[in-house]
Image (cartoon, rainbow, N blue to C red; front, side, top):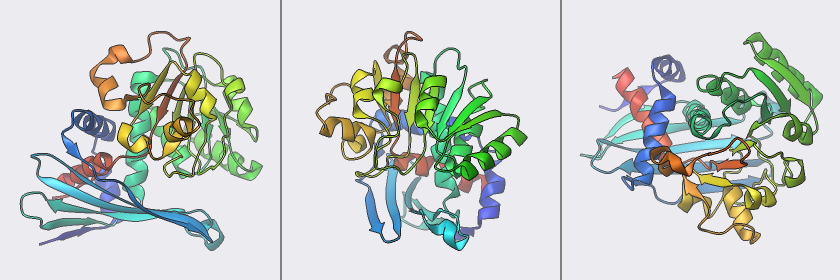
Length: 315
């Protein structure tokens, strides 16, 4: 019989799951070609601006496959609603039976995305992170910082947002949790003061520019998960010593690698897949003077990993 799990049940289960390790193992399996992930399905809306993603996949010779629907509607604040929603459907790979409906309201996508940021930082951050920069001040910007705490000791932060009210609220929330937060409405300040930067916005034009980013910086770019989104000046990727993709195939059609390739500023052979970097750390940072970029577009293996972990915890 199909199990139906509520957000509260899912949230309780997550407290006992090492999601960073869970997601890291998924990236390794993906880069070993053990995972089948069809192209992303998506619907993009303009009035009001929003999107719905359909991601699905399985690990070969495993017990499960997943179908995930996640939406993001950016004017929901006007109605007192969260930006994100969604659910995950977990099936048996042996029988096709629907085992579980995870009514996570988009939370599992948010958690697995934050965990991916921590995986990247674990392998790509400078030896000493003296200040963390967050471009964006919403829910995922909070989750990224908190998840980074599992792999990065730094608690000094500069956050950029679209309004003073937004960044002040972020500062208030995160300082309550032990961080020291400076705020700015100029993304160049983040580039100037931080050597680990995470970008988490739905921007369609670059927020970080090449002439502002210092040598020795690592940037994890997360917001550009559709073909029209972009947070980084493509010249940053052209200049970078190391460019990493969560999925090379997926990043050929969306994200910062796609934008830089389209602008003829990035060769197809330059990006390294994240799972391969984890397996072969000689591909990673060899000097704290290097500029490194990770382009995370969100891969279905992350949804599979977190949904099956929650299912096992609740069964």
